[in-house]
Length: 326
Ligand code: AMP
Ligand code: MN
Ligand code: MN
Image (cartoon, rainbow, N blue to C red; front, side, top):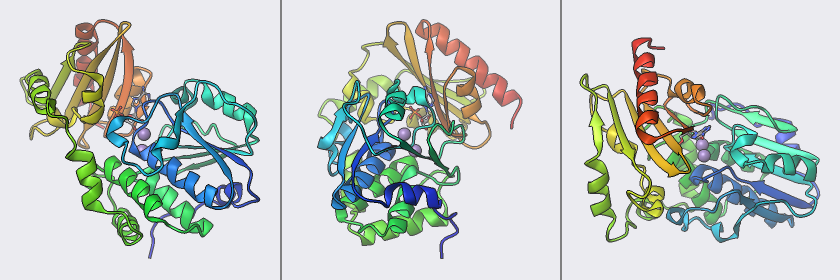
């Protein structure tokens, strides 16, 4: 039934052994794909009597406070003690852990790298990269199935949310028949699509729509209509608002737009850039040119400089990419 490639035997073997101490290590600014998959693997290992530490350089955002078990996700600045295995999901390179991957390599003899980013650096002792997977959530569903781990409603909810968010609610070009087969299996196992959608999109704060209005008033569209961008100065809106809104989706939603950009001034002279495309331009290459990365249609980078200068540099790179399509 499945068209998906098999789960590599070394990935299964890394987890299918006598219980010990496991680290589930997340990437910076964790999203639902990384959190859902780490929490799902962690729960499956705990059910097998493993002791599990889950965490990463940044806390889980309030917008994902509904993920089952997320209260166990810790902010880690260093790693305490030794581990039998460390697992990273959805994390293409060591920079995305702010150095914790190096600590994990010292603390654990086995580092399992499970990811769907095309620019994954294969930093693990065991590497499983499937760029055809819409989300790491799909891969971890297949891994837990291969392990014979029971899919509890909480595991199903975590993995369903991972797939739901990385596919833009099953709307993006990464969606395949396998995505729906996995979503169906997760729903059968107790994930509730209505509950997940309400938790993701219908828990806005009372002042969120006013801030959304003020933010969207800053959207610019290029004269040819192919590029739309939103540049937010530091402090223009609170961090918790940005974390709970995928603001880049609004410039993306304009019909003529081929590339959408969100540029957020972070303070400290840095700007976080999110890029989205619709198939015509590979924004991963644009982000890569600024030291970032991601996927062909969704990528990001952080650039030093004043907001207006960074905006101009990014728009120039986008124009150049549009002039030389892939
Ligand atoms: P975002 O725009 O932050 O939602 O990120 C979209 C995609 O780009 C995700 O797959 C991220 O993993 C990737 N990404 C974002 N920022 C960076 C960065 N600074 N370096 C590498 N990849 C990034
Ligand atoms: Mn992620
Ligand atoms: Mn992902």
